[in-house]
Length: 145
Image (cartoon, rainbow, N blue to C red):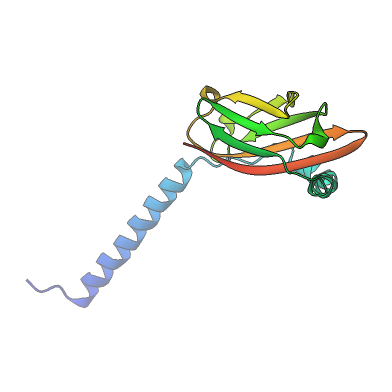
């Protein structure tokens, strides 16, 4: 049986329409989350983050976050001992897994976080602290195995 060009055109057009309907269905099912609900207020305060990054880059050592067995270890610079601040663990793929903890570094400059609080995947760790009236900010990516 031979199919003429008119029927072929109808088949191609119907395939295109079905494909477009499938794509519309898939996009309505896709979960899309905003990074933060207060994005405008955070954007206005971004100059503080820039100043904090410059202050942190001026320190002798940088803040580091590593996975070490059953713990996630935050190592702070010696200049940041007894500083008050916040450690935020931001999960780009799922906002329900975000959490923050107060910065409480020990005498050795290390703070431990229980590995059980984390799920496998990428986290962005944002550390803000204030020492002697000066604001500091550090950010690092951490992949939990």
